[in-house]
Structures are given as structure tokens and as C-alpha cells.
Amino acid sequence: MSQDALWLDAEQQAHWRAFLSGSWALLTALERDLEESTGLSMSEYEVLVRLSEAEERSLRMSQLADQVVASRSRLTHTVQRMEQAGLVARRASLGDRRGVDCVLTDAGFARLVEAAPHHVASVRARLVDVLPPEQFARLGEIFAVLGAALDQPDPVS
Image (cartoon, rainbow, N blue to C red):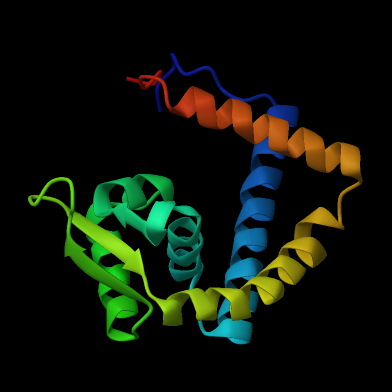
């Protein structure tokens, strides 16, 4: 262990560990709820949501990967499964034939419409309704700050 490291004090360590265990437990529970109620994984659900919000329900695969925060190879595997299930289709990008677009099918949109109420109920029960409104708002503000900071060059290197 480096002697130069700026170690967390006891209170910071407690908050860090609470964040780790709480975020892990929350995401695990949301994933389990979604899979049990809809048969979709969280990554599949996010693909459906992002495509449903896109113009003409279509996004370039690289844009979709950025939006769902997945590596391109992981997204490719997810989209392959979804394509086999008829939820999405891939096609050559209309603007640039070198690219590939992912398009939400009517069946995929119907699956999203069916799944969304279950997922929203889970998010409400496990997060939104657990926190007082001011704490939930603060949580959103905190993660907006973290997201912006993480979009900057790596401060650790």
C-alpha cells in the first residue's frame, strides 16, 4: 500500500461502504423485479426505452452504446438476443452505410409498453417512495454532478 495515498477517514469510509452496499442492493433488486415480471434484463429494457425515445425509433449502434452505458461488444450481444426475439432489427445506417442502426420493432415497442408499468412500480417501491422528496431530489442532483465529473478527463491518472 502506498504511503502517499489520501485515505478515507472513518466517516468517509462508512459513507462509501453504505453507497456500495446500497447501490448494489438497489440495482440487484430492480434487475430481479424486472426479469421476474417481464422476462427482460435491465440492459434489454434500457435499449427498448432509448430506442422508443429516438427519432423514428432508431439509433446508430455507437450512439445506443453511449446512451445505455455499455461497451459496444456487450451491446452487440444484447441486441443480437433482442433481434432473435423480434424486439429490434439492425440495418445499414441511412446516413452512412458504414454504420449500423438499431431499430425498435412494433413487437419491441409493445413489449416495452407492457413492461414499463412493472418497472416503474419497482422503481417507486424500492427508491422513489422510500426517500422523502427532498432526499430523492438531492440524490438526482448528486448523480448529475458525478455524471458531469466523470465525463471529464480521468483525475486519477
